[in-house]
Image 1: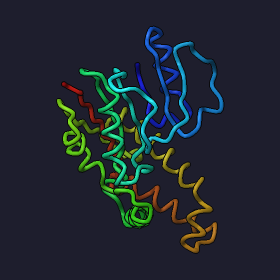
Image 2: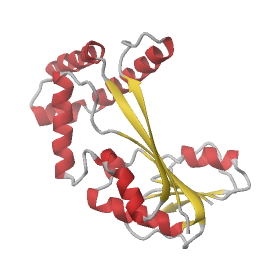
Image 3: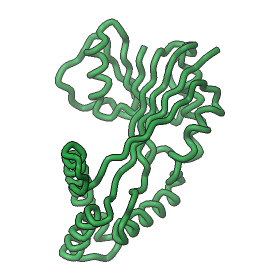
Image 4: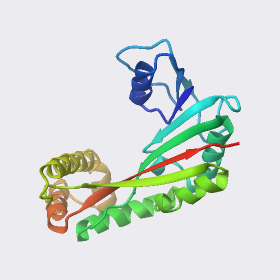
Amino acid sequence: MIVDVGTGNGIWAWEMANEFPSCQVVGIDRRKPSEQISRCSNLSYIEASIFEPWPLADNSVHFIFQRNMGQDIPKEKWRFILTEMHRVLRSGGEIELLEPDLWHHNPGPVQQAFDKFFQDLCIEMSINFTFTESLQQDIQEVGFQNVQQHSLDIPIGEWPQDPELKQFGFMNKEIRKSFLKNRKPFYTSKWGFTSDKFDIVLQELMDEYDEYHGFSRFNCWTAKKVM
């Protein structure tokens, strides 16, 4: 069995079900995906909170995947989630966690202001803003073995000389720009900005990425249950 934790729109679970038709794939989230292109006979979804005991039997899962959940998991819940992963995995089963740093690297002054604001929000919501720096130790302390961490830095902007990195940087910058545009009402209300003022700040931020060579860091942890 393969389990997708915090499955969201269910696309990763759906892709795994298609790639491994002989394996049962389960997506867990508070809500089932509202729409999907097609359903596979080996794919199912469970409506459940990952902050409560998972409705899965002990030693029943071969592989667990989790992605982009760090900004939604309170710091006091990480140990519980990792313990549940360890409980439901079979001996020899593995986990793979993909999480970006919640802050930006090589930030200019505008990005620093955005990051400080987000850090304060994390404190209010009991989110560990720097959880990626301690997650490897947490995984080990729960009992997982063969814990490995890999990091990948993706530029924001077209400042790299390498053509491929330049393309990645362009896409990363556009994603960041779209995200902030969608959050415009939130920021203008919190900071007391007019709509025009926010647009100016957003453009300054986009220019900073190229000037300061900003980048995002994505982290991947893999580990195995051995017992």
